[in-house]
Length: 462
Ligand SMILES: *Cc1c(COP(=O)(O)O)cnc(C)c1O
Image (cartoon, rainbow, N blue to C red; front, side):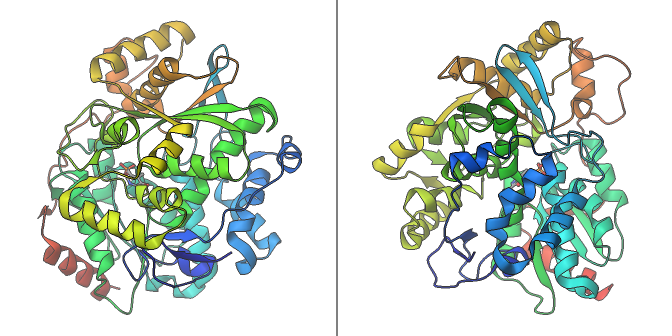
């Protein structure tokens, strides 16, 4: 399997190079030049497999001959070893034909562990003693960085630079990031939003200032982030219908990567009848799916902080696919977006997207009500992001006969304070409500020079 850039240069790289990278040379994202397709019989034959056995089979065509089968198998299985549930990603039933896929049994209790753990194994396998040449880089509202810090145990020589918004990052995650600081790890609060952090990281990766260091993005601008998430769809669909019955999904928009991963899973032959894009008040993606108008906007803080942003980097991969892998067209659209903050795709491409996608924006009042409703209906605490997905799923379900699965990306205890306040929580409330990031260095939202200085300090310290 070869990878190329979404922005049209002729580069062809293998899985290893795509994985050990930030952005492609022309500023685009790496994408596989073709999508592997499995036959219905082959998919159905996997229905008895445990999660890790399924995972390497789904990933294998994307990895190509970069790794032999036993190696891939071992790395993939090892990456789920620290998970606390034997099922890795169990389904929780909410009602008739209605489910949450629990993706929060990893070491840091979010779905980000799937990609982070896998990435660390791949990096260590590819670079071995040379891991110290790697700098993991990314923007985060907390969860991705915390997952990346935890995964560093498996390639301890790598460095890490994370930028997070000073307002809106949950205090417990900010505390983990601050306490991880070392000669090779730096997590810095930015006086701005997640979008500001992401813009700084993109600018840094586009013009990488340290030739001796390999930048590797720790969120799903890196292909491994998408790859890890494609498996979610296969796993859920196989549990619920053996790969034969169509299944619908509702995705809380903690990033576009999961949504794009679902789109790819469908292209690979998985019978997915619908994907619902569920946003909160920060509804940039809802406006894109609903009326083909995507715009960068100011974001506000909500009950589901991980969804509080409007810059979705994987949208670029989606646009590239919708335009039949036309890098020139994608480049033009993305450059227009970068200049004007707005993007609309062609009518044909948009209609194509609408065949699979629906969307909805759920405000905080409805999210609160949904959390309480779900607690009464099931006796279980459901986190606010998943509640957003369940609400949108109930509203926009196309086929009552098809199971609908909401991705549960975050453990409910991460929002225990809110759930307890709503009477939807059993037991004690762990410390760590939403708060400001507090002390520690604070970068201005446009301080790229400051980011360069941090990186130089990290490089010097190693
Ligand atoms: C996960 C993710 C985010 C959100 O990051 P958090 O740290 O979980 O808030 C944003 N963008 C991309 C590409 C991601 O993969």
